[in-house]
Length: 367
Ligand code: NAD
Image (cartoon, rainbow, N blue to C red; front, side, top):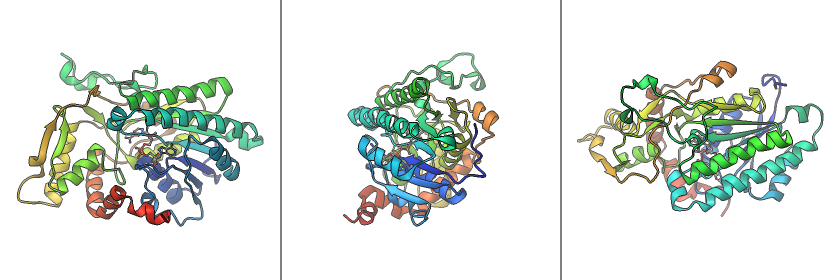
């Protein structure tokens, strides 16, 4: 049975709500709907309460600093707040960190998801009536679980538009400890649906970009390094292709799937914005040359560095299913989204400083 989002005021528990995408989901839920949010976040280096400053005072927003691997605390939070939906975003998410230290990725992404599933199942089993029938567990995942796709440079006689895309039926072939740990968590979620009947949904999304992105990922790193006069590191030849989606478009898609998606289904989410990494870096340099010009072009700061081991060459999502079945389409083009993003980083230097040194967090938590 579908939940009619327009008639209900739901309680939605969001894990990882202080992260990049999670905070966009929380801001969207508080600003654009009447639902209430319980944000469950451990506050690792990637979680920042300053990203939620604009919703912090809402009576519909509650923060719980909890590790998803802590079964007793998850049980307490579920029983105390009685959520209608769980949207599970908490994860270790940076591929380079997963190569340097995979242990945390196995712990949070696999053991943490297992712990959350078990506690969600126990909570769901003791619900009754509509509350039980309408309960949803929405697992948020990545297109990186599918491995990589043929790159136009490697395929003879193929036009760009002939190249394959990831669909919901593409076989899993993860390449990095990060994507393998996310693949493991996706399998657990589907098994909990099949074996125990837990009403789950899975989404797999392409690369996100936009405001409040921790400055270790390509786009914010390039913007901030450019502004500080530092080098702009590009892996290998910079020809790896990613399919970019503006984070607020992803947040809208996620809330739509969580509230309107069909139980047991997977939805791929993507922006149809395939770009080589070098094109992305050059675009950022051009926008900066335009809005914050200096004597030389920012592009002169680009440097090519040794490629990442196991680096996937191309990701691209077929997002037809979510468009056709749920009516979602992205509102931003890459050109409009990247311009907004560059401007946001120019206007929010204080956020960047605070997340890098953790000062806002310490102030909020009184330590
Ligand atoms: P992020 O690294 O910015 O945020 C992760 C959040 O999870 C942080 O707030 C962190 O404090 C929290 N967290 C980490 N471990 C935790 C634990 N053990 N218990 C509770 N909270 C914990 O990540 P993101 O980029 O916002 O990604 C969110 C989700 O979306 C992830 O599951 C990721 O795999 C997926 N995803 C990301 C992208 C992308 O481009 N960033 C694309 C597709 C899917």
